[in-house]
Image (cartoon, rainbow, N blue to C red; front, side, top):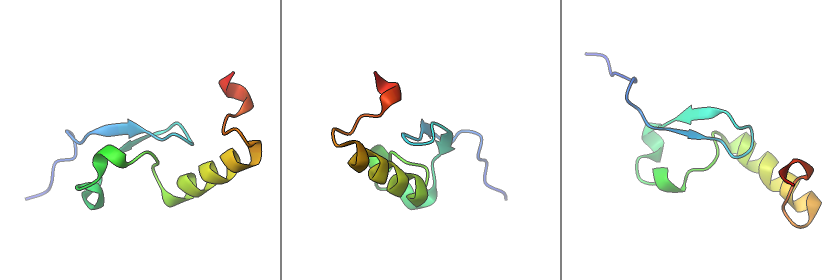
Length: 60
């Protein structure tokens, strides 16, 4: 029997602003997941370190 992926929870990635769905590897820490991928996590971390205060120009 195939798994139904219709009812999986979704979140919006803090970096790319795209929706992403729950994955089995996140079953213990879904509440702490903020990024859709390691790439977004690393890129977001690098972009906030450059600005100093952690805010981008488009957040004002």
